Image 1 (cartoon, one colour):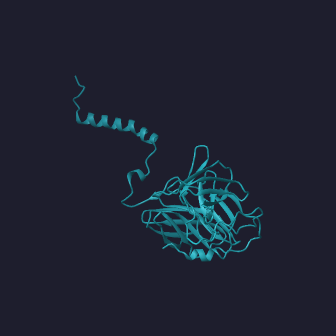
Image 2: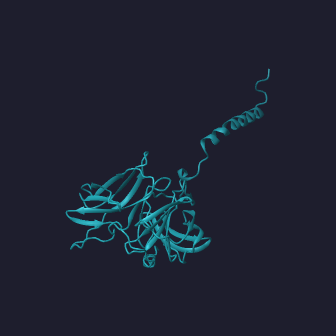
Image 3: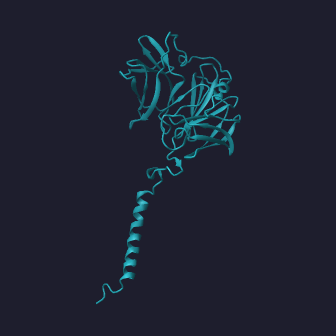
Length: 304
């Protein structure tokens, strides 16, 4: 099962010095009738580096992405509630809050949208007291991120076939188990604190497996709230201030080039295929072999 205990544990992360930050992405204006906040369901990167975000909201609501420095872009959801916004190419990670205004009702999505330059994924949603949510999902098992606080409480998140049991190993030892939801996203809380240092994470299901390596360390003071970001080996590390004032670290891994799948349901298209140039180099050898076979079977051909 997806371990909801991660929320209570990560919420206990240590306090950080107060500083200016974007409006809290978890506080919605009180209303008599509940209305779901906007959701982000997809992110893609264009040839020019621009990132297009897509999601759902209330029909014809006004959608807004706002950065802590006040920069913002907006759009309007269609009659079915669908929306998309394109953000220009960036050279460094940015955190933006997602909100909607429907007839004067302001609703904010939980957490932040982290926009990432290549080679990282176009975007992930980072959420307080739980794991980051990826948008680039496939049939292959993947590790999207590791979240942890200064006390070492940690969560691993990523993609897997819906309904699959996900088993997590930390540095070779069993460290947790969960299940991918109906959208193919898993969030698993580690069963032991994450010490500082170099680590390996392995995730396995009955359909495939994935692994990642990273270096963990307590977050340094954030001098320019609400976050700092730095490039690590094969990942982006983001230290950010949660709405409760604590500091959470999110390590977002670069997308894997290929998933490792197993089992009878793996389609031929999912299997690794030899590069075209390798296949072409084998053709002359096959032709020569065929000629030798034909000569052996018909020794009289070509004689006078």
